[in-house]
Amino acid sequence: MAEVDLALLAQQSAEILEELRALRREVAELRELSGRTLDFERRNDPRRPSSLTRR
Image 1 (spheres, helix red, strand yellow):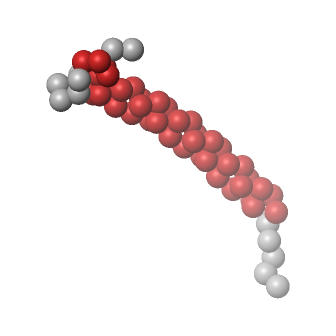
Image 2 (image 1 turned 90 degrees about the horizontal axis):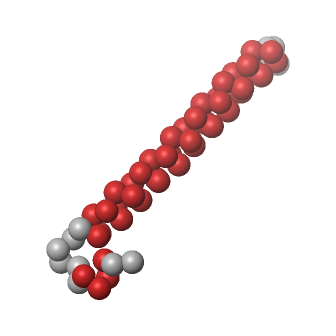
């Protein structure tokens, strides 16, 4: 059986988890930004009746 460096494995796991957290934050920010952009585009779409764009 191969020897496993538990300290190295723990360090790598911690780094992976931190990167995952950072990516999740970035995805949340991008989703929020894209939602705002989509909302803006909908409100300014000349093909949509004005009754739908006023909130």
